[in-house]
Amino acid sequence: MIDWTHWHNEPYLIGGLVLAGWLWAVLAGPLRARLIAASNARGTPLPADTPFPRAQAWWFYGSLVVFYLAVGSPLDQIGERFLFSAHMLQHQLLVYPAAILFLLGLPPWMVDAVLAHPGLRGPGRLLTHPLCCATIYTLVISVWHAPTLYDWALQDKLIHVGEHVTFFGAALLYWWPLLSPSRTFPPLGYGAQMLYLVAVLIAMTPVFAYITFSGDILYPTYEYAPRLFPDFTAAADQLLAGVMMKTAGMAVALTAFAVSFYRWFQAGERAEAKK
Image (cartoon, rainbow, N blue to C red; front, side):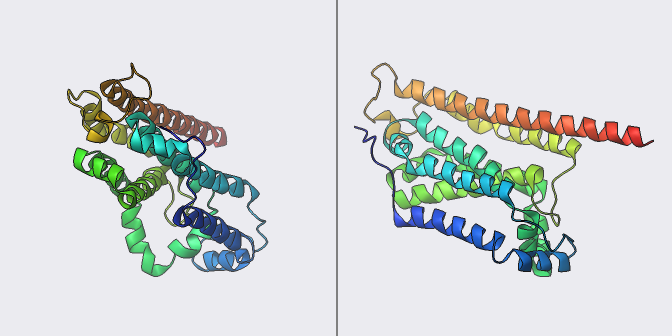
């Protein structure tokens, strides 16, 4: 059964999160002036006395907390051994709040000090192109839900870690055209953001339909797992996971769509007021 007191404290997980937090603190603190100077030299001017980004610190460290809750809490054990819907919740925590907070927590000068390097402009422009971002995100999520790969991840801890890392990385690309912290590779205009969100929702429909409307239990691990709730069958669990995937995706995308529309409307109002 579930050990509700078991939290993952593996060195690669805790060490990775501590390293990310330490690196951000060093870049935002002792190295801030140097990064701002490098960013200014590459065409993204900012005042040399730019203060410590306190707001971004909250976002960034909040992202690390959400990431740990998703993969380090007892939720991981439930999703790995018992419930597909719990595993789906893990993925949604990585794809939505963790990835969103991570991007919100990166100051532009911290990002552009690296991305504005001449040698990275070409690859960066390609990788952050909306079509590339949408394609990578859709393929990563869809391919990992193939029964063979998904069940392999449930049986092999290293593969499972790889699955979660690629989900998070793909999510960062998915949100980049909307939340890019970079002036070198900025976010899309508001109208294009709305089209992008609708396109990704449509692209994700096949994997949602595959999970939700399948007449078979797709993943043997969950088919033969001990039932935590006697009346909650593997078929009901799979249906719930599919519905969670679609409803959460639609809710977040529609919220982002509404924000983009409002900002688009406000920009139009400001332009009219200047005439």
